[in-house]
Length: 411
Image (cartoon, rainbow, N blue to C red; front, side, top):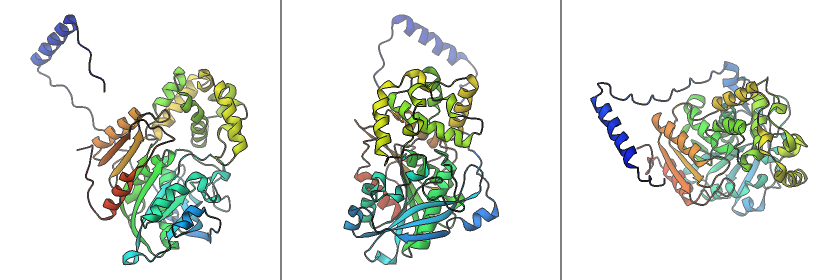
């Protein structure tokens, strides 16, 4: 924070008068209210019985060479999970990675990884691509550390067979948390060396998912041993996006990402329609704005149009539409409740998509809920060039050894 400027004599006098008046008052200032913890969701018996059950599995022969080079194999899976929108069972795809070497002491801990935004349609599943849509480089260090890793595609991305959902509920935190946790169950069923110790890790959209998984771990998977979560550039609290949209003060990065937010809104809120939120160039060739990372032609079209986005292109059409957006952003805001384990948050001080002050505000709220949080802010880094750093590996190793976090901003 910047130092405060010197006050004028008039302001000093006013401040002294205010302090004197307060001292004479018989009423002490009220302490800030503790955040209200949301109740846990409900699950029906049929959903609870089958979650994490593997529907199908197959070895991945064309996985990125960087993964096979460190002595690991990949298995594509389809498994049962739960929709956070309606509580129904859903079939979800993902991919499991296992080091080939014999497991020390006969077992390996599991890291469930939540990927960032890759798109919102079925063909945007990382498990369908050899390079995992750029996330192979994240899996390699986990293999070197000797973990079993599992990456869910999330509901609506990837598998579209019986029991699947045609809709990806972007940024719906319960759904993504369930998908990550059930991925651990599926990985353990598929890989005998996978232990019941597990941790969550995710970036951006996946950072939100990993945080949500930390909140739901004990409730949703009490038979597993959750040790903590790493949330990289997590989309925890985007409530200010509603105000920014209405006031035309979104950054360009936020406007480019706004069609994804709108897709999540329309998936969760039946009355919401894209035409109320996306105008001008954002309403033209709409599929290119939420295109998959692998669709290079669509990404090129999007890149050509970014310069033509106007501030008014993301202004809701009506007051009702603005309220609908703000209410939904409040619904998906994290934290919601206490976490089952400690969390490491890493974000950049130059992030123009998820502002660092938004992350800091969410952490303050988490601290008030009794969290244990280690927070690292990378200087000069933004949303898309964030370096997790060696601290992430060190943090994971300590959690799997059962050690408490060495740093905790919550005190």
